[in-house]
Length: 302
Picture 1 (cartoon, rainbow, N blue to C red):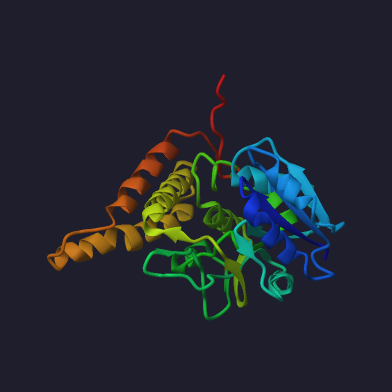
Picture 2: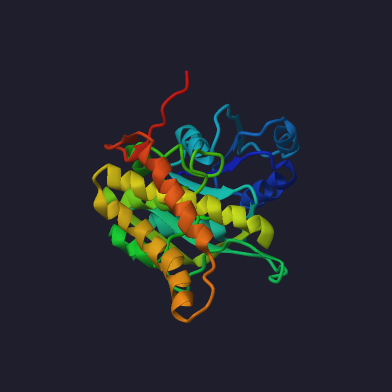
């Protein structure tokens, strides 16, 4: 099967060269690398012009948000397998081949997530979002997502399957109306439509997305707003099972930790997750939903 790689980027001209060059190290795959650029200036385009590889395809996007960029890239890609990563990542040797192999070995899978690991950094000052599993697994039911879900930084998609679902929800992901949860959303929708989702623990991509603890507060709020919205979308569409993974995560990772501290007579912390989830849920309730595709359809401003 033909393989395309896809990187969506915005205003990261200083980082884009690393991920692009790492993806093009292998001579045979990918057959093409599509970069969808939503930057405010031409710096990213100028950097990419210096990379002399005929497989590199540059698309200047006038849309906003990762969900929209993913759809633009999926529609432009020529490969049936589309390997996606972020503009602050670096493909490790064998990562592309490994994640492609995982998807190829599971013909019923629409999505495969790989491990996402961090380079060495000072853990006392900040963190890097990662996703690491010790064993590979196949998810066949949406409830399987309650035990965790992968990150869009290390993801392979079966193009025909994702397009049959109506593509990605363009309101989700960085830059979107709900700036996260694009990865769990596509997994939920794939599983609800009879596809499988796989985790491969055999390969990992390197994530350079370091955040200080101060910046992390906004990152946490962003994530939980999007999770709340994703939850409300399923409930409004009458797909109750689709809301279970986000409700489970809300209960386990947002509600229970402060409750546990209260029980042990300690001051509750982490309330930002609760308030952000509720805010996202409320905003999701106010946003129209395409029940067939299970995506938000924001009202257009006149």
